[in-house]
Image 1 (cartoon, one colour):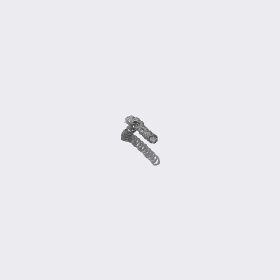
Image 2 (image 1 turned 120 degrees about the horizontal axis):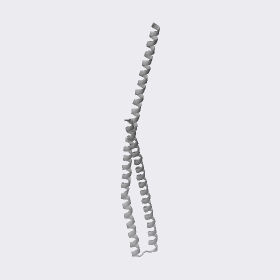
Image 3 (image 1 turned 135 degrees about the vertical axis):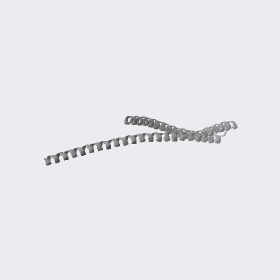
Image 4 (image 1 turned 30 degrees about the vertical axis):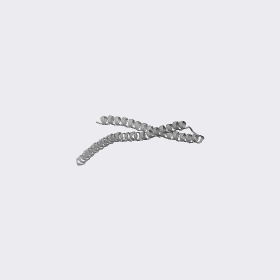
Length: 149
């Protein structure tokens, strides 16, 4: 029975390690998402500054239309990026929940193994105490018999 529990614990520990790796990966993807979003936002700000600077020097309607169209595309890209945030956050949350589940399972096996070990030790202590009690009773009876003889 103990070997089976040890095997189950090893399996659970392996699942826990895989869950930790998946969680770290999901967190890294979320971090990368935020870096990329910040880069796009910064690029948009820089582009707007250039647009204002060029506008002060004068722009043709065609140039303005092209620049404005590109700015609209940047805004659409940012909107799509922001929509993706919930996906990355959900991925992290799912990984955290999975990790907590497998961790709980590992802890349950550890607890069960420790409980069995403690029960076995208690049983051994009781056997030893019974042996010592019987030995003491035997010695007492022998001593009594010697004294009566």
